[in-house]
Structures are given as C-alpha cells and as structure tokens.
Image 1 (cartoon, one colour):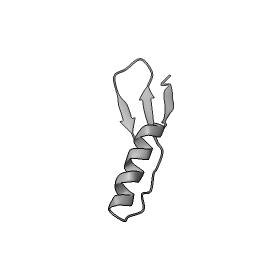
Image 2 (tube, rainbow, N blue to C red):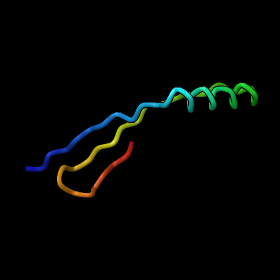
Image 3 (cartoon, one colour):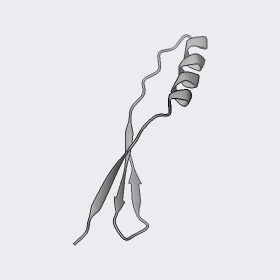
Image 4 (spheres, rainbow, N blue to C red):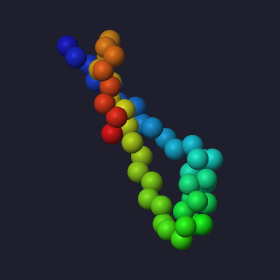
Length: 49
C-alpha cells in the first residue's frame, strides 16, 4: 500500500518581515500563500505545492 505524507511549509518570521519591508518600499501589497510538500513513503518522490 502506498502511504502519502503531507507536511506544511511554514514561513519564517524574519523572511516574511524582509519581504514585507521590500514590498512597502516598492509600494505594493504582498500576498503570502502557505504551501505543502507531499511525499510518497519509502521513495525519493516528492510534490511541492
């Protein structure tokens, strides 16, 4: 049986602050979307969304 593992990818607070500062300087509004990684157990296949 194939087992699929799903892991959330959180944003680091410092990275988010840097990006917000850059966007503020350029007078734009950032939109952050949390992603995830899906792995098939016991293989080297992975899907990033």
